[in-house]
Image: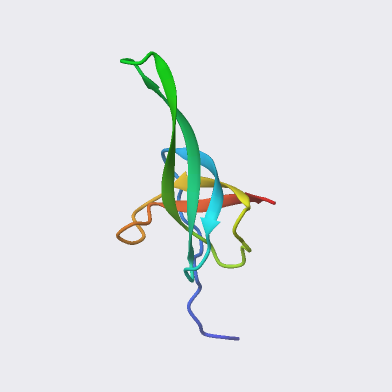
Length: 91
């Protein structure tokens, strides 16, 4: 019988769920996910391409590399810039 602490590796996901592409995986437990969006500009009656970069937490046991398409979900604040966690990886 071992007497050790049981680790809980689950984060509750609430709020927004997005899809995007991993553009940087240089951090230890985090990646930067980029979303490409179209924003309407009423003055010119046209759409402009914009991007949004989100820092997301990588759970233990999940392999994520630059170029992977991922699904991220909003969770509690993990650090100053991390509010999202990776849910799925689509290579």
